Length: 307
Image (cartoon, rainbow, N blue to C red):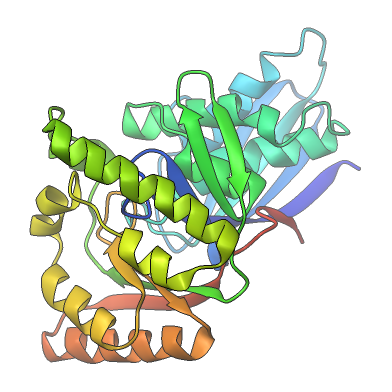
């Protein structure tokens, strides 16, 4: 096999109670990527699609992670051409850079007959994320490479685990058409927090994980709280508090900021409620003349898919 085409899904990071820890893989939102083996050594990069990103191979997430992967091989006398059809807006909060970072290493690994497991690809993909965000955080890329809902125990050692996903859990994404860079958004986060807030956040995270395995949607609802990051980041997201109120009144079991924002996520039990939430959020944004994109997605338990 000399060429491969893949779907690189978007993702939701943090899920409110797990800042830089939790990730969730989306199913119908993502980029497409074609990677082809070439005679010339190194990486060639081509960008097309709806959004413009850098074509500098030393700065683009897809090429940086690919170069990191190739450095692990001593004797490769060929290279790869990476063509990215960019459909996830950079700065959207649904894992644009993670889709590129994870996609390129996944595709090259497949063409090399899988010398690495998907979990072993995480450190390479993390280099692409760092190139875009100036920080090592694996919550998005872990969800994209492993699928489902994932937990990162350590962003230094990339010690990660895939969690169980309740079968009826659906996600609504609402994306106001403004850009918030992850690197800028991280500046807003307070690095020192009270021990009481830390305890409350840790309690919500632990209970959330238990609720996933027990498919306890009431418990999930009680755990989708963010007292550490949301109070600061929500101030720069249009209509956040009003949208959260509307979502919860529409049957959402949890509403919060997706990654760094401005996208927001809602969790629902079943597709009908997820669609009801989407419709009511759309109505509010239209009244406020705020441009947006919206999606309803099941949780993608597979992650990156070969097309």
